[in-house]
Length: 474
Image (cartoon, rainbow, N blue to C red; front, side, top):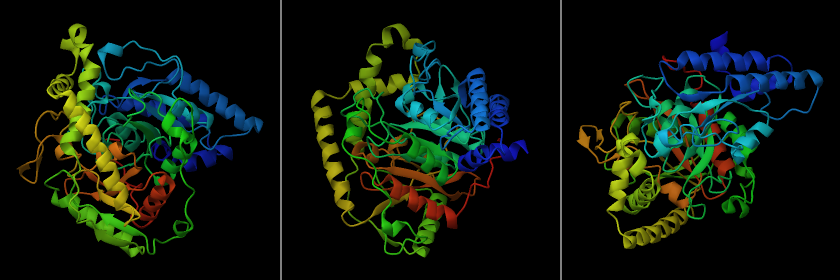
């Protein structure tokens, strides 16, 4: 019974709570117990908020009994990535630098989840400052994938992905600065949405005007991701990108049960030279299913410059600037990969940086032009299944027997371009490979088409369901 409770979709749990058929105290207590029992295997959490969550669950139960107005996520547990502030709880960023830093207030996304009734059960692990696609850090150690403890759940929202996949709260709040929601979601067999820039205000970005980092939902079902996204969406003056628009309502042609006439552009490669055959097979099976729903699937054969080098310049110079003031005091306690990325960033010039920013504009314009021909773009989320749990992100990735460059040139190449362009991009499971590990399909839409992207994913989920699968290490 406890296992069934842990894998209950959030939307179903909220409905049962509203009808008085599920006790928030019992539900949250079961999740907290499971989190603590899993720590030795998965290490998905840096902080467990047992006292605060239990008190919130009691208050949620009393509200149900009193007939008070209830939010759409009333009594449902949520985990929060440890780059996002939760009032009164440490935000360590996976670093000794901030190991004792306690947040004074909730981030906007967290405050909105609480307003919807969700209960924060803990903070999930991240690599130091979220800098890489493998969730290891000097502060928290190695986080492991519940589908195979020798594999990574990805990064930097790896703890969030491992937690959601393992039934340690049905909702997880992640962030995505270069694929950090989508890559872990693909690696752990869950759903993850990087929204349109500004759809969910993200006031914590280091440079809010050139921001490429996003907060978004990570869940086991598309319906849960949709409910979580809806709870967080909307403008806030602290994030200027949130003031310029908002997600469009679901268009009429996507409100039915089919995708007749919807045009999907399949991008087989981006900056990556190789895709693992199993991932490619699962991707094509998912595309066949979409075609079976009436979608028109065409391969994008355009020669697109996905600006891998320029994107790397933007990313690594940003890390160099962030780390520069820390090295004298903290150098020997920083992640060596973080230091290496900073060193690489210092090797670029100001002229390199400006040219990279110009290339970002060209990429944006190129991608928007693609949406003049296709309604959505689809691709694998990762070029192979999850890497080793302790993979060195400064080293090249080997796919199908070929060395393919560091992670962003190979494994995660499909993700970062859409951080740079701001388009909504979602990963959902495309299936499980022969090694027993999940793979992901990425669906990308025009700006503000978040609900449409979620709807396409929901229709694919209906014909290729996965939520009944449970990882062996859960």
